[in-house]
Length: 280
Image (cartoon, rainbow, N blue to C red; front, side, top):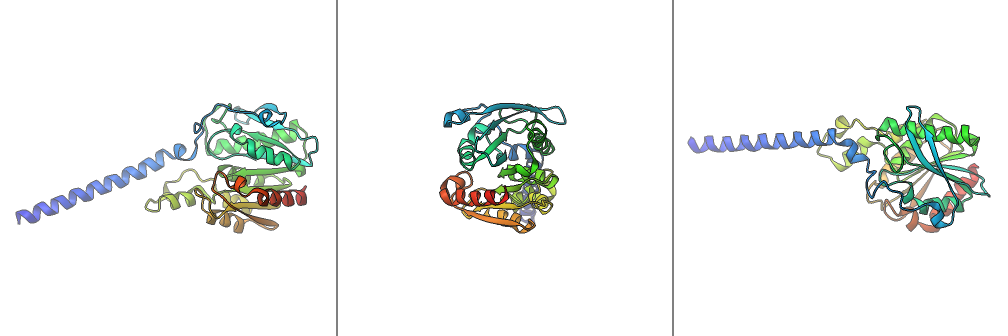
């Protein structure tokens, strides 16, 4: 009887330890979500290069959001521009890490306006989901009100986290088109894939519901995603595409999450060019 009692006691201890460990994991995910989503310090907030390093003149732009946060971006004009691209980048680094993409869009005869969200690069403030939407709206207002660009001449582009922000903005306005690259359908969906043993859909207070936003976009949508994306699964991109209304196109890429647009080469550039030419 004594041995039996010891075994039961040991099992209860293991059970309690397991419950506490599981609760601790849930608490970590819930309270540390911002650090799991936003990586402004990887590789860093310092601007390591400028468009001039790839031979493109540019303007440093400062503008203010509705809640009085000062943001920083670059405006790269193109003398042969057929339209303008509003660029929302992913969740790590800053605008100076996107020169390869800026060069591609310049080759596609677009003015490019790329910004850093609050808390990224030289932009002020602390990053939040609501804050990034305010940042996107302020960038749109800058192009419309300060530069005097017609919304029909603006393509909204978002990569990874930026795809959700771009989709939110496009659902509120009528741009020429929306390009979603390597995006996720929502934070809860991605979180459940990463942590299938946790009740992520209950824990997630960040939503970034790209799938919901894209349903309300009335303009043409291009969704680009790689089957070999090592961070955001291909299925996430397909979910976004299926949720989007017509007219819509899907561009299948090659390569990983961070280099797919480079690895895909001419197939990527030609796919973008056809879509842009059709909608500008």
